[in-house]
Image (tube, rainbow over the protein chains, first blue to last red):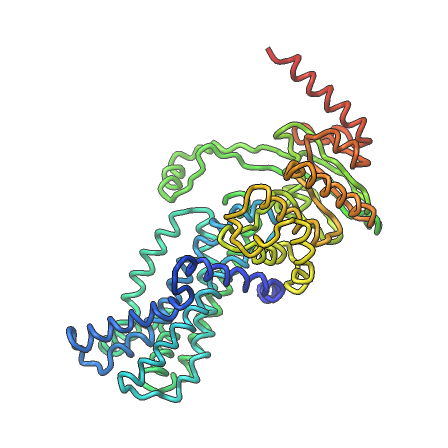
Length: 258
Length: 254
């Protein structure tokens, strides 16, 4: 763990440069360029709002905000993983030629997606007053679940990026896992949809605490209970400790398999 | 204890690769292999029990046939591989010119690539910004520096990559068969720069097939064959053995 902190501090400029490179390349050759990072979620929100306020009416007020408050962090999570799982393999040429610390590649994938997530919160903040949903002071709490989510995501990316070096099926399996995971997580439905005595099943899902923190702060204007916050960080650190331990164990052999 | 003058030290270094004919790349292959229980992997030693030291200020050439293990040796020194056996100790900053432009991304501009390449080699952003102008000047890129490198000609690309490596001013420069880049004018400029580099008391490792370069620019040469160190001596000595080796091969051919 200390190695992780030391290396990521030491190579912070490289991680940042790689993350920016990723964003630059993603939006290169488009006329609107970086604006797409804002426009993409904005258009998605527009569509969702129209669909759920006119066509499919849920008994949930301002369903678009209800949904987006957790869909945006979820998108960050799944996009980070999808990018990072290939990050070692796709930088194979580099790894074979330059002695570069391997951890910078999954980290850069996560950092670039954090930037995307932060940008996508801007149109959400605009949507709240447009839909006349109250703008709660609890928004200032968001950095806390953001941090917990980033830690959790990073741990997962380390694991998947390392596993994909040895078995390229991992990238495909990941997509299956992510789509199943999306539905077992209360993203499109509320947490209390399940009957009381089945609620414990949801709590087996390590991402639920952090996801719930986002929704409480943005949609309900509440702060999660202390146990819930603690649980989100415990899940995060367990993921990071295991993920990085595996990554670290195999990182010197990546060069032979990429 | 390594003396302060030793900048590179290899002690009984062996690098083994597992050559697998049918590596299980997917889980399905893994399963089918588990049931067959027959491993068709065999080991290949690209570098066998090699030991040598390089002192500060030396210009060392590594010569040998294709596939003799020269590049593996360089990658071991550059830290790309961890040796299977033995130890590699390198003191001081090292700039690998192992494959020019390995860290370049063709959608980024020359300027952006200079920074990224420097960061990949372990330099800080500030250090790279300080050196940026010298790099641009040396590479003779001109206003193309702000164009994406995919628009560069081969020569421009190589010149920029060489300029980055030499102008970051490392203590050890590792050069793998790249001086064939650019026209004669640029090559002379590169050698001129290498000469000044040596005068500053810095160390050069050169892998090449161009024997005149070895004789002119190096004061010591290693001959590697089949992963083993055959000769460690003067360039003339190493080249003579190398020539004999090649002749032997030609004579043996049917």
